[in-house]
Length: 398
Image (cartoon, rainbow, N blue to C red):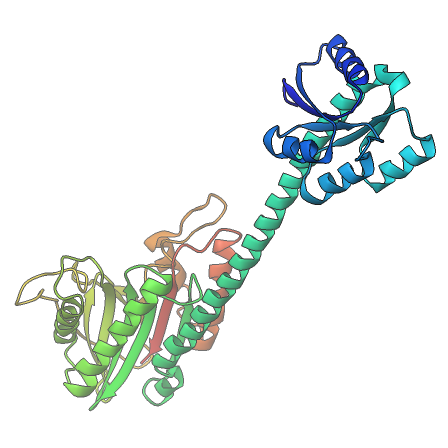
């Protein structure tokens, strides 16, 4: 409540106005009072004096409290108190039902200060409540707007996932090229920055697993660029040497970003498999190849250079590894999503060693069964912890 109250008094009897002022002063109230006795003065007082509360006698020569209250009720939000001795209590109750805040009989002015204070305090609370309700309404509208925009964005990303999935090769095509396979692909978000790609060119199966910079929408856009470049390099230029493919891929990413000093790109493991002799050529950019054979699980190390992060006209020198696979050997290509996933009882990263031991334990499992086991392992390890990155593992049985 204000420390200093502005009171507009509608009263044509100076003696009564003095009594009202004296009673309020006696209570210790700090106030200034503007007294009017006509309709014109009343309206001027409302606009110029800007009162906190209105006290009104009922009957004036050319104006009365009902007319005054009608003006206030229609155009202003100011408490209105009937202070009179010339009306019945029944009439006063009728006025209060119409919206008048209170009525005080002139022979009981001792009640006036408390009534004024209570009404003003209640008015403050009312305004605070109205402010809270208005804020709630605004927040509700803002939340609804955010929900609508979020739905539109989510719907767009879901549709983008359909486009991204349509660009990936159909894994069932591998049935004619290898004796067994699985693709475990679990995006962190709706769309993924990890992607797999394969193509048959002449007598060779080219297979790649890539981890693009970022995840979600940025990673997905980079994956679209990578898939398009690999299609051009292998299908149009008929390049099948892994190191040469990676060099062209690096050059393509650099050209896409107009050779700016950017770290956007990808890590990738890429194999070229002779489908007649089972000879495997491998080159990797920060991603290794694991091969399961009779001697156990062997790691073929990549070149420690990413795709897209190397500047220069000649491009990086990616190392080529050539090995002879035997029927029954299994090739594993994967991103770092699972090794970097937090989980377990201590909420620590899985790490490469534990991941390798897990893959080694799958040695005698059917390829379809391996995917099921990997799915269970990922969910068990992650538990209630948030997935931190996209997870992609591809297995190919020679």
